[in-house]
Amino acid sequence: MLDTATGTLVDPVQDGAATLYVCGITPYDATHLGHAATAVAFDLLGRAWRDAGVAVRFASNVTDVDDPLLERAAATGVDWRALAAEQIALYAEDMAALQVIPPDAYLGAVESIPAVVSAVEQMLAAGTAYRVPTADALSAAELGDVYADLAADDQFGEAARLDGDEMLALSAERGGDPGRPGKKGPLDPLLWRRERAGEPAWDGGSLGRGRPGWHIECAVIALGNLGAPLSVLGGGSDLAFPHHEMSCSHARALTGSPSSGARAHVHAGMVGLDGEKMSKSRGNLVLVSTLRAAGVDPMAIRLAILAHHYRDDWDWSDEVLATAEARLGRWRAALSGVGGPAADETLAAVRAALADDLDAPAALAAVDAWADAALAGAVAPVEGAPGVVARALDALLGVRL
Ligand code: 5CA
Ligand code: ZN
Image 1 (tube, rainbow, N blue to C red):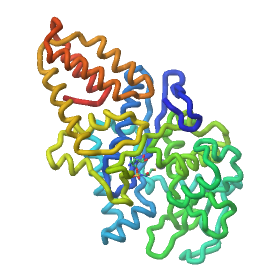
Image 2: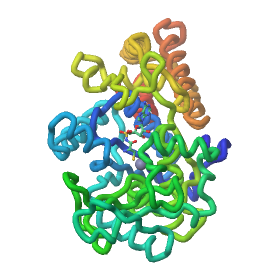
Image 3: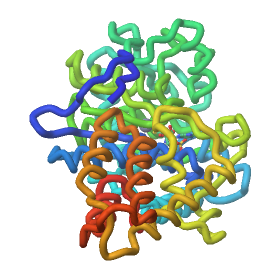
Image 4: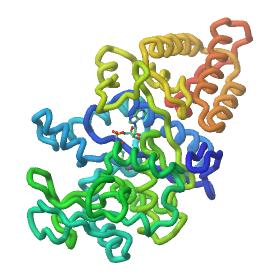
């Protein structure tokens, strides 16, 4: 895998085992093609590992309380819990349709609050977190919000490798608050937000009522369910900074170990539409559920995603989908025979492509070559070969025909 922290290819598997943490959705405007592409990318990794005999443990989260979710619920006049529940269910349906294997541990931010509170209390006690007074906390104002002290982490910045100005700009853009008065460092991220009027809040023990910050959510869920270090910490490239940088910093603070981040930081490229990143804030979304409702075969959506290398940024378009539908049709026709070209070389080529930093386009090309040969009928057919190819496509690529 390409480790985006070092820019080098690394093999994060150790002793035949690997842990994978993939950042899941904030449940509104799901599931757009960007969410789907990132989920499929890491699903492919899990499949390649399992095929190679690696014992995989996979965890993911759903950010079921955070500012963007609350803002969307308020803007549309729905209860934030109802919005989250509906979107989580829709995402699960879309993932099942796309043959994404579910995580072994799948946790929400809300259900993880007791673990987050313990973690933040631990960081306060260790001096790696501090309080910032709030003017409008509903009670015990002196407790304040809690922030992580990044100055206590001399490895901070090693994963994303950005300069100070870039970090400040991305922090402001992606949920941080570099201008908040009272913080020790502008990049210091929120760990616990005290209750504010009109906002949901939970019992925070010695922290006072409030709700969790974003990065600590993933740090706590990953540590609690997979341990440290992670083999792969994954998500879209929009999470490289600040989210993954901060989550790893929190993991180091909580374990006291400098190597408790991730062996490989792996980031999927951004899917866009007409040259712009597909995002909830821009509203330029193509939803998996809309395509499904229009009768598009989910396997064509999966093939459209797999036609792009996971690291590349790419644009969704009608042509991308039409190409995938045509490929699906050719593969189905080729697989419909009792006999077909021998499968061994094709399987070896698909496995080799996946082992080469998940080169899905090369894997598809190998299957195309088999399908072309099958349809041309030029080689002596081997009985059962189409079945072998079909099962390999299902297991390795998650394409069930
Ligand atoms: N809940 C957080 C992660 S803890 C979050 O980023 N949620 S999200 O709904 O915005 O995104 C869910 C996943 O999809 C993340 O891994 C994110 O990096 C990825 N993602 C979001 N937009 C795109 C896009 N346009 N292309 C590819 N992946 C995307
Ligand atoms: Zn996350």
